[in-house]
Length: 211
Image (cartoon, rainbow, N blue to C red; front, side, top):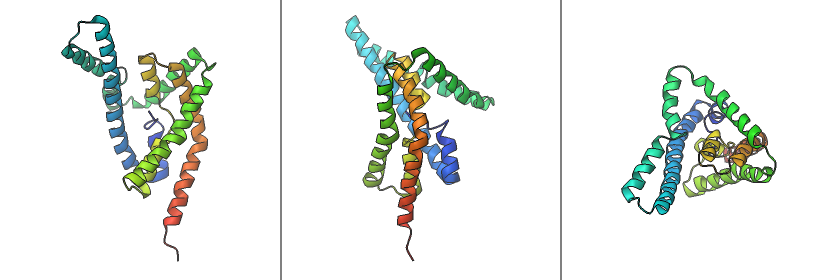
């Protein structure tokens, strides 16, 4: 899950202007709605099935009820709704510092010993593998080009976001690797972002009519 809001919005505004920011915000809305709800529902359904096998007594409707309840009352989904009210109250500027504190505390708690290799692999996949995949599918699969393609690929090229850590902590699955991946990918983005921008700049230059 990429850092599409805290880092992505100012990046899109600075590099692509108002038109690019509008595309980015539209993608963020769909991105968050689909990924957060789908991932939560899939994991909660899997957990409910596991509990049903252990209990040997839960029916399908009980599994669905448990899944729906845990999907709504969730440390990622529920705060999104609460965040809307928080932002309306004029307190939205506290989000970034709080996320940084969360990541810093997690890094201090888990440490990096024995986890750096996995985190580096995840960071490379996020910074290079995912945007390359998005570029191929978006351009050759859906025919996107120009500004929409650039915004989409740069969004995919963003570093790992804090939501990945929240999910990892929620389901007790590799939280230390998720924390380290956030740090490594954020540092690596300083190097990979210019590469992707140079690629698009070259493509735009070649697409210009020659006199």
